[in-house]
Amino acid sequence: MEITAKTVKELRDKTGAGMMDCKNALKEANGDMELAVEILRKKGIAKAEKKASREVKDGLVHAYIHPGGKLGVLVEVNCETDFVANTDDFKEFVHNLAMHIAAANPAALDRDQVPQELVEREMRIYREQAEESGKPANIVEKIVQGKIEKFYSENVLLEQAYIRDPEKTIKDYLTEIIAKIGENITIRRFERFKIGE
Image (cartoon, rainbow, N blue to C red; front, top):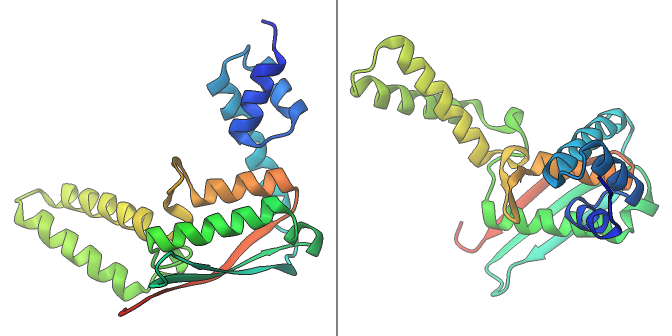
């Protein structure tokens, strides 16, 4: 199948990957756009994993104030060099991340930062709900595990569905930007401020 410049551009716009990467992915996928996206994501994840061990010493602290001035987010995102910290792609990622945090209100950056007491309280509530419905013990545990996974996906930043593209998580978005920029990037910390909270 012939790969046209139009389809290559469409894939590039969709994924942000380089032109040659897009062309090669479309060839490998025989012109199937969805399969090409999947191929690029797998390659991006592999590239990002290689970069994960590299030290991040630079980056940005970004403040986002939601219109009306009653909600704000402060976020620190690190990268390897000041050159990357000053690129439009990196700045856009940091800004979009701050807007996501404002909208989605995550409780923690990753699972390790969720207070253990909160997880235990949630598990206790889920277990009691499942037991009250008369389910057998082995089913109760499966229900509890399923609900705690859902709890993490709603409250842990890296596992939340990205508000601008719910098909991917914030971790997926981070992986894509690492692959696109070519440096290791780490979301270091964030704080969300809301009047009255």
